[in-house]
Amino acid sequence: MNSKYFILSWTIALLLLLITTTGFNYLVDPYGLFATPRISGFNEKKPTANTRVRVVKPYQVTRIQPHALIVGNSRPEMGLDPTHVCWSAEKRPVYSLTTPGASVYMQVRQTQHALSTTPAKLIIVGVDFLDFLVAPENHDDPYQWPPSVR
Image (cartoon, rainbow, N blue to C red; front, side, top):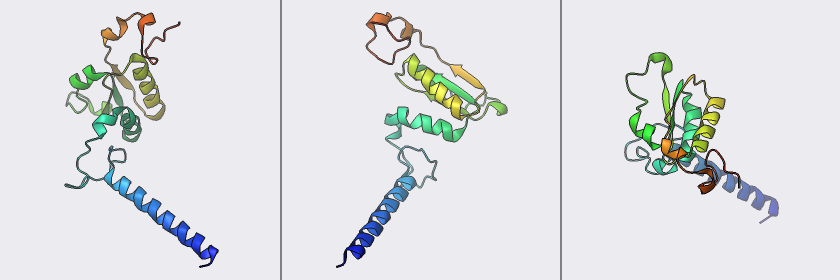
C-alpha cells in the first residue's frame, strides 16, 4: 500500500467520523442549545440540561434574543414565569436567566453577557438578601460579590 493512498484514506475516514459525530450531536442536541426539532422517543427529553444550567443558559439567551430578562437565583426561577400572559407583547420573548445557587457576582456577569448579545430592554432582578448577610471576610466563594480583600 502506498503512503499517499494510506494518508488520503485515513484523512477521509477521519473527516467522515467527525462529520457523523457532529451531525449526530446536533440532531440529539442533549442540552437544547440548537433548538433542533424534538422527535418523540429519540431526542424529546433533555435530562442533563437541568444539571448544566450554568453552561446552557448563556447559549440559549444568545439564541432566543429576549426583550426582557429575569435574573437571580432559584427564588425568581421558581416565582416568576417567563411564559405568563402578564408579559406584554413588546416585552416578549422573556427569558429566565436565573441560576440556582448563583452568587450576586455570577448573576451580574450573566446579565452583562446577555446584554452584550441581546436586545433586552427590561431586566427584573430578584435580589436574595441572604447573599448580603455574610461578612466579606467570611466568604468562601471566590466569585462572591463584593469580593473580599484579605
